[in-house]
Structure formats: structure tokens, C-alpha cells
Length: 259
Image (cartoon, one colour):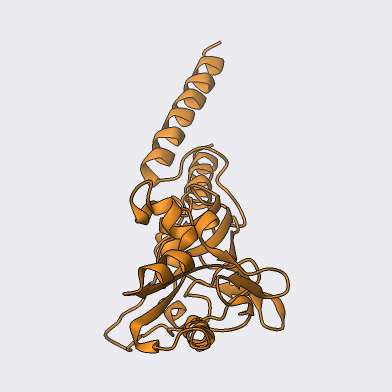
């Protein structure tokens, strides 16, 4: 009887506690090796939204070209402009439609390449190209995160560059039952959609191709193989639950034996 009780408690403790090795991010020493995650210049995709502005001493030019943004910014702080209404969406043909210029294909270009294309087109209509300059930005980095995450859903990070850690932190962190060693990232590549796997408990993930987010990434946080049966997620909570259960069991046995 005694051996059975001890074995039962030991089994519960081992199967119910989630190991720190499975919940701690980026384990490893930075002293042994230098890490520098690969900065990338991503290219545009269909349905990306671009924020394009022209700055110039010529108020007529800027008011006309920036008409979408100026109409909204006049009602409040320009930083609160919704890019859905003020930006330029890349349609299914890879085009955006700009004042003066008309339709322009920007699919698969970097932001700097798009800026250069716009400046070259404007130069056809404006004699003095030194009087203006063009700014092209991506309207944030949009991602969708599902699975064992605190706040699943679609979010947009207002940043030029963001990591998968940024996305997870902005979504309430992975739950204690989420598998941090086998995270799926579904990404649109130039030759089709691909699934990537990243282990965020290993510091080597800093060198992964998907450590940096790409616009429209889908992040799937899968559960660990076996979830606890509901008796606790920490050693203390498991111990208290087991102790209570054990006390009830012993009390019941003693009562039966006393009959």
C-alpha cells in the first residue's frame, strides 16, 4: 500500500509539472558564440498597404498628392491616421494608383525601389526635382497568431522590423501548455506558401530565417504532447492538490478499516 501511494505521487509530479527547459526562451550562452539575427529587406506582397507621402515647398503639390492623408490628419493627430483609409493597397495585379502617376506596379519591390520608381515618375511632370522628396513606408507588420497563446488573433506591429518574440509578447505570451520547441510559421514566399519550424527555447533560433517577422506571417503555437490533467501547473500547486487527495484517501481507508 505504501509503495503504491509513493509511486502514484511520483507519477503525478513528473507528468503534471511543465519543465523550465520547455518554457524558457533562448537558452544558451552568448559568451560562447556571437549571434546576430539576419536583417532582411522584405519585398511587397498583394494586399500590403503602403504609406506614401511627398514633401515639398510647393504646397499645391503636397496637398494634391497627400490628399488622402491630409483629409484625415486635419481632423486630428496624423499619427492616428488609419492606414486602411489613408494608405495605398497593392491589388491582386500588384498595382497601386497614385495621384499624377496613375497605376504603378509595385509587387515584389522593396520600399526603396518603390520610392525610386515614384520619384522617377514625378520627374516627368515636375521640372525641379530638388524641390521635393518621397517617403514610402509599410503600414506596420501584420501577423496572425493562433494556438496556445494568451491572446490569439490578428495584430499589426507599428515597426520597421519585428521579431517573432515581439509578436508573442504582444499577444499575451505562450501559455504554460504551449510547445515553444516546435513553433510553426506559415509564410508566403516568392515561390509559394511554406511552413517553417522554429525552436524558441534554443538560442540558435536567433539565426533562423523566420526569427524576423514578415508581413502576413501566420504563427501556430502547438500544444505540448500531454497536457496536465488539471491538478496544477507548478510544483507547489501539484503538491497541494496531491496532498489533499492523499489525505482524503488515507482518511477513507482508515474509516473503512475501523468498521
